[in-house]
Length: 294
Image 1 (cartoon, rainbow, N blue to C red):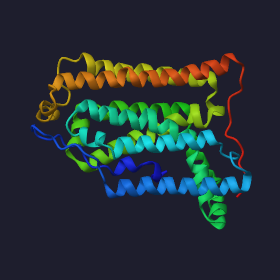
Image 2 (image 1 turned 135 degrees about the horizontal axis):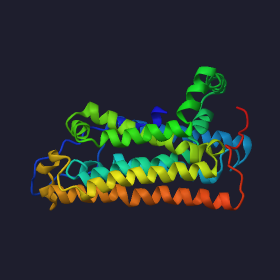
Image 3 (image 1 turned 90 degrees about the vertical axis):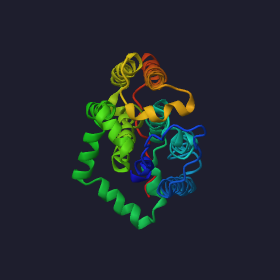
Image 4 (image 1 turned 135 degrees about the vertical axis):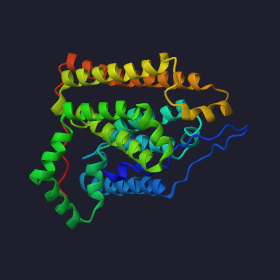
Protein backbone atom coordinates (compact mmCIF):
# COMPACT_ATOMS: atom_id res chain seq x y z
CA UNK A 1 0.00 0.00 0.00
CA UNK A 2 2.80 2.57 0.64
CA UNK A 3 3.83 2.18 -3.01
CA UNK A 4 0.43 3.56 -4.02
CA UNK A 5 0.94 6.61 -1.80
CA UNK A 6 3.80 8.58 -3.40
CA UNK A 7 1.53 11.63 -3.14
CA UNK A 8 2.07 11.59 0.58
CA UNK A 9 5.68 12.61 0.10
CA UNK A 10 5.03 15.65 -2.10
CA UNK A 11 6.02 19.02 -0.73
CA UNK A 12 3.62 21.73 0.37
CA UNK A 13 2.04 24.08 -2.15
CA UNK A 14 2.87 27.27 -0.32
CA UNK A 15 1.32 29.96 -2.58
CA UNK A 16 3.98 32.04 -4.27
CA UNK A 17 4.03 35.82 -4.29
CA UNK A 18 2.76 37.41 -7.48
CA UNK A 19 5.41 37.76 -10.18
CA UNK A 20 5.38 38.44 -13.90
CA UNK A 21 6.97 35.13 -14.93
CA UNK A 22 6.09 32.39 -12.42
CA UNK A 23 8.37 29.35 -12.48
CA UNK A 24 6.20 26.39 -13.42
CA UNK A 25 8.06 23.23 -14.39
CA UNK A 26 8.31 19.55 -13.69
CA UNK A 27 8.67 18.41 -10.08
CA UNK A 28 11.35 15.86 -9.28
CA UNK A 29 10.93 15.05 -5.61
CA UNK A 30 13.34 12.13 -5.08
CA UNK A 31 11.04 10.12 -2.83
CA UNK A 32 8.05 10.57 -5.13
CA UNK A 33 10.13 9.33 -8.07
CA UNK A 34 11.44 6.41 -6.00
CA UNK A 35 7.93 5.30 -5.01
CA UNK A 36 6.60 5.67 -8.53
CA UNK A 37 9.54 3.74 -9.96
CA UNK A 38 9.35 0.95 -7.38
CA UNK A 39 5.59 0.52 -7.82
CA UNK A 40 5.94 0.18 -11.60
CA UNK A 41 8.97 -2.13 -11.54
CA UNK A 42 7.35 -4.45 -8.99
CA UNK A 43 4.14 -4.55 -11.00
CA UNK A 44 5.92 -5.40 -14.24
CA UNK A 45 8.08 -8.05 -12.53
CA UNK A 46 5.07 -9.63 -10.82
CA UNK A 47 2.95 -9.58 -13.96
CA UNK A 48 5.66 -11.22 -16.08
CA UNK A 49 6.22 -13.95 -13.48
CA UNK A 50 2.48 -14.57 -13.18
CA UNK A 51 2.00 -14.75 -16.93
CA UNK A 52 4.93 -17.14 -17.32
CA UNK A 53 3.19 -19.50 -14.90
CA UNK A 54 -0.45 -19.03 -15.90
CA UNK A 55 -0.16 -17.88 -19.50
CA UNK A 56 -0.29 -14.38 -20.93
CA UNK A 57 -3.50 -12.65 -19.98
CA UNK A 58 -4.44 -15.19 -17.29
CA UNK A 59 -4.61 -14.60 -13.53
CA UNK A 60 -4.58 -10.88 -14.22
CA UNK A 61 -5.81 -9.93 -17.66
CA UNK A 62 -4.43 -7.42 -20.11
CA UNK A 63 -7.22 -4.92 -19.34
CA UNK A 64 -6.38 -4.72 -15.59
CA UNK A 65 -2.69 -4.42 -16.47
CA UNK A 66 -3.48 -1.54 -18.81
CA UNK A 67 -5.62 0.05 -16.07
CA UNK A 68 -2.68 -0.01 -13.67
CA UNK A 69 -0.45 1.58 -16.31
CA UNK A 70 -2.99 4.33 -16.92
CA UNK A 71 -3.39 4.90 -13.18
CA UNK A 72 0.37 5.09 -12.77
CA UNK A 73 0.57 7.70 -15.54
CA UNK A 74 -2.20 9.65 -13.78
CA UNK A 75 -0.03 9.73 -10.64
CA UNK A 76 2.83 11.08 -12.75
CA UNK A 77 0.52 13.76 -14.12
CA UNK A 78 -0.59 14.78 -10.63
CA UNK A 79 2.77 14.65 -8.87
CA UNK A 80 5.57 15.16 -11.38
CA UNK A 81 4.16 17.21 -14.26
CA UNK A 82 3.90 21.02 -14.15
CA UNK A 83 0.41 20.58 -12.68
CA UNK A 84 2.06 20.04 -9.29
CA UNK A 85 3.95 23.34 -9.46
CA UNK A 86 0.91 25.18 -10.85
CA UNK A 87 -1.00 24.15 -7.74
CA UNK A 88 1.26 26.53 -5.83
CA UNK A 89 -0.22 29.46 -7.75
CA UNK A 90 -3.85 28.51 -8.39
CA UNK A 91 -6.44 26.84 -6.20
CA UNK A 92 -8.13 25.54 -9.36
CA UNK A 93 -4.94 23.76 -10.43
CA UNK A 94 -4.58 22.33 -6.94
CA UNK A 95 -8.14 21.05 -7.26
CA UNK A 96 -7.35 19.41 -10.60
CA UNK A 97 -4.41 17.67 -8.95
CA UNK A 98 -6.60 16.30 -6.17
CA UNK A 99 -9.28 15.12 -8.60
CA UNK A 100 -6.69 13.36 -10.75
CA UNK A 101 -5.53 11.50 -7.64
CA UNK A 102 -9.02 10.59 -6.41
CA UNK A 103 -11.22 10.02 -9.47
CA UNK A 104 -8.66 9.07 -12.12
CA UNK A 105 -5.60 7.44 -10.59
CA UNK A 106 -7.30 5.66 -7.68
CA UNK A 107 -10.00 3.74 -9.62
CA UNK A 108 -7.58 2.78 -12.37
CA UNK A 109 -5.07 1.49 -9.84
CA UNK A 110 -7.74 -0.52 -8.02
CA UNK A 111 -8.82 -2.16 -11.30
CA UNK A 112 -5.18 -3.07 -11.93
CA UNK A 113 -5.15 -5.37 -8.83
CA UNK A 114 -1.68 -4.20 -7.76
CA UNK A 115 -1.60 -5.95 -4.38
CA UNK A 116 -1.99 -9.36 -6.00
CA UNK A 117 0.50 -8.61 -8.78
CA UNK A 118 3.11 -7.15 -6.43
CA UNK A 119 2.95 -10.34 -4.39
CA UNK A 120 4.08 -12.25 -7.46
CA UNK A 121 7.17 -10.04 -7.70
CA UNK A 122 8.40 -11.42 -4.36
CA UNK A 123 10.63 -14.51 -4.01
CA UNK A 124 8.67 -17.74 -3.55
CA UNK A 125 9.37 -17.99 0.18
CA UNK A 126 8.26 -14.40 0.74
CA UNK A 127 5.08 -14.98 -1.27
CA UNK A 128 4.18 -17.90 0.98
CA UNK A 129 4.78 -15.81 4.11
CA UNK A 130 2.76 -12.95 2.67
CA UNK A 131 -0.13 -15.32 1.95
CA UNK A 132 -0.10 -16.56 5.53
CA UNK A 133 0.10 -13.00 6.86
CA UNK A 134 -2.91 -11.69 4.95
CA UNK A 135 -4.99 -14.66 6.11
CA UNK A 136 -4.41 -13.84 9.77
CA UNK A 137 -7.75 -12.92 11.38
CA UNK A 138 -6.50 -9.51 12.52
CA UNK A 139 -5.19 -8.55 9.07
CA UNK A 140 -8.11 -9.97 7.10
CA UNK A 141 -10.62 -8.50 9.55
CA UNK A 142 -9.07 -5.03 9.34
CA UNK A 143 -9.10 -5.14 5.54
CA UNK A 144 -12.72 -6.29 5.47
CA UNK A 145 -13.75 -3.44 7.76
CA UNK A 146 -11.87 -0.76 5.79
CA UNK A 147 -13.28 -1.97 2.46
CA UNK A 148 -16.83 -2.44 3.77
CA UNK A 149 -18.85 -0.05 1.60
CA UNK A 150 -20.37 2.15 4.35
CA UNK A 151 -16.99 2.49 6.08
CA UNK A 152 -15.06 3.31 2.88
CA UNK A 153 -17.81 5.77 1.87
CA UNK A 154 -17.65 7.56 5.22
CA UNK A 155 -13.85 7.70 5.38
CA UNK A 156 -13.58 9.22 1.93
CA UNK A 157 -16.39 11.70 2.58
CA UNK A 158 -14.84 12.82 5.87
CA UNK A 159 -11.45 13.33 4.19
CA UNK A 160 -12.99 15.42 1.41
CA UNK A 161 -15.03 17.71 3.64
CA UNK A 162 -12.52 18.04 6.47
CA UNK A 163 -9.58 18.98 4.26
CA UNK A 164 -11.59 21.64 2.43
CA UNK A 165 -12.37 23.48 5.65
CA UNK A 166 -10.38 26.71 5.33
CA UNK A 167 -8.21 26.26 8.46
CA UNK A 168 -7.09 22.76 7.44
CA UNK A 169 -6.66 23.57 3.75
CA UNK A 170 -4.54 26.64 4.46
CA UNK A 171 -2.53 24.70 7.06
CA UNK A 172 -1.65 22.25 4.26
CA UNK A 173 -0.52 25.16 2.10
CA UNK A 174 1.84 26.37 4.81
CA UNK A 175 3.22 23.12 6.19
CA UNK A 176 4.89 20.30 4.23
CA UNK A 177 3.95 17.86 6.99
CA UNK A 178 0.26 18.78 6.91
CA UNK A 179 0.29 18.75 3.12
CA UNK A 180 1.78 15.25 3.24
CA UNK A 181 -1.10 14.14 5.44
CA UNK A 182 -3.65 15.79 3.15
CA UNK A 183 -2.45 14.05 -0.01
CA UNK A 184 -2.07 10.72 1.79
CA UNK A 185 -5.62 11.03 3.14
CA UNK A 186 -7.08 11.82 -0.28
CA UNK A 187 -5.33 9.00 -2.12
CA UNK A 188 -5.64 6.33 0.56
CA UNK A 189 -9.34 6.95 1.21
CA UNK A 190 -9.96 7.10 -2.55
CA UNK A 191 -8.31 3.69 -2.99
CA UNK A 192 -10.52 2.29 -0.23
CA UNK A 193 -13.58 4.06 -1.69
CA UNK A 194 -13.17 2.55 -5.15
CA UNK A 195 -12.56 -0.96 -3.85
CA UNK A 196 -16.21 -1.97 -3.18
CA UNK A 197 -17.58 -1.01 -6.63
CA UNK A 198 -14.48 -1.91 -8.68
CA UNK A 199 -12.16 -4.21 -6.78
CA UNK A 200 -14.67 -6.06 -4.63
CA UNK A 201 -17.94 -5.77 -6.55
CA UNK A 202 -19.15 -9.07 -5.15
CA UNK A 203 -19.50 -7.37 -1.75
CA UNK A 204 -21.17 -4.16 -2.92
CA UNK A 205 -23.47 -5.58 -5.61
CA UNK A 206 -24.57 -3.54 -8.61
CA UNK A 207 -27.54 -1.93 -6.84
CA UNK A 208 -25.43 -1.07 -3.81
CA UNK A 209 -22.72 0.38 -6.05
CA UNK A 210 -25.26 2.69 -7.71
CA UNK A 211 -26.43 4.10 -4.37
CA UNK A 212 -22.85 4.30 -3.09
CA UNK A 213 -21.67 6.32 -6.09
CA UNK A 214 -24.80 8.48 -6.42
CA UNK A 215 -24.66 9.67 -2.82
CA UNK A 216 -20.97 10.49 -3.20
CA UNK A 217 -21.72 12.44 -6.36
CA UNK A 218 -24.35 14.42 -4.43
CA UNK A 219 -22.22 15.37 -1.46
CA UNK A 220 -19.08 16.17 -3.48
CA UNK A 221 -21.25 18.20 -5.86
CA UNK A 222 -22.64 20.10 -2.88
CA UNK A 223 -19.11 20.98 -1.76
CA UNK A 224 -18.22 22.08 -5.28
CA UNK A 225 -21.37 24.20 -5.47
CA UNK A 226 -20.56 25.90 -2.17
CA UNK A 227 -17.13 26.83 -3.51
CA UNK A 228 -18.57 27.97 -6.84
CA UNK A 229 -21.34 30.20 -5.53
CA UNK A 230 -19.58 31.61 -2.48
CA UNK A 231 -19.12 35.36 -2.55
CA UNK A 232 -16.34 35.14 0.04
CA UNK A 233 -12.88 33.65 -0.69
CA UNK A 234 -12.34 30.52 1.39
CA UNK A 235 -8.56 30.41 0.97
CA UNK A 236 -7.11 33.92 1.12
CA UNK A 237 -3.55 32.55 1.09
CA UNK A 238 -3.89 32.23 -2.69
CA UNK A 239 -4.51 35.97 -2.98
CA UNK A 240 -0.78 36.58 -3.28
CA UNK A 241 -0.30 34.27 -6.25
CA UNK A 242 -3.41 34.21 -8.46
CA UNK A 243 -2.74 37.64 -10.07
CA UNK A 244 0.47 36.25 -11.56
CA UNK A 245 -1.64 34.09 -13.89
CA UNK A 246 -4.41 36.56 -14.62
CA UNK A 247 -6.99 35.38 -12.07
CA UNK A 248 -8.50 37.06 -9.10
CA UNK A 249 -9.00 35.09 -5.91
CA UNK A 250 -12.74 34.53 -6.24
CA UNK A 251 -12.58 33.58 -9.94
CA UNK A 252 -9.95 30.97 -9.13
CA UNK A 253 -12.06 29.56 -6.31
CA UNK A 254 -15.15 29.35 -8.50
CA UNK A 255 -13.24 27.53 -11.22
CA UNK A 256 -11.94 25.07 -8.63
CA UNK A 257 -15.46 24.53 -7.34
CA UNK A 258 -16.74 23.82 -10.86
CA UNK A 259 -13.95 21.28 -11.36
CA UNK A 260 -15.04 19.42 -8.24
CA UNK A 261 -18.73 19.75 -9.09
CA UNK A 262 -18.98 18.85 -12.78
CA UNK A 263 -16.11 16.66 -14.07
CA UNK A 264 -15.78 14.77 -10.78
CA UNK A 265 -19.54 14.25 -10.61
CA UNK A 266 -19.53 12.88 -14.15
CA UNK A 267 -16.91 10.30 -13.17
CA UNK A 268 -19.09 8.96 -10.34
CA UNK A 269 -22.12 9.03 -12.64
CA UNK A 270 -20.34 7.05 -15.37
CA UNK A 271 -19.38 4.22 -13.02
CA UNK A 272 -22.88 4.21 -11.50
CA UNK A 273 -24.45 3.96 -14.97
CA UNK A 274 -22.14 1.05 -15.80
CA UNK A 275 -23.35 -0.71 -12.64
CA UNK A 276 -26.95 0.04 -13.62
CA UNK A 277 -26.40 -1.47 -17.07
CA UNK A 278 -24.99 -4.65 -15.56
CA UNK A 279 -27.90 -4.82 -13.14
CA UNK A 280 -30.47 -4.45 -15.95
CA UNK A 281 -28.70 -7.13 -17.98
CA UNK A 282 -28.92 -9.52 -15.04
CA UNK A 283 -25.15 -9.86 -14.85
CA UNK A 284 -24.02 -11.24 -11.47
CA UNK A 285 -21.75 -9.10 -9.34
CA UNK A 286 -18.16 -9.67 -10.39
CA UNK A 287 -15.73 -11.39 -8.09
CA UNK A 288 -11.99 -11.10 -8.10
CA UNK A 289 -10.79 -13.88 -10.38
CA UNK A 290 -8.81 -16.70 -8.87
CA UNK A 291 -5.09 -16.61 -9.45
CA UNK A 292 -2.66 -19.53 -9.61
CA UNK A 293 -1.03 -20.38 -6.32
CA UNK A 294 2.51 -18.98 -5.95
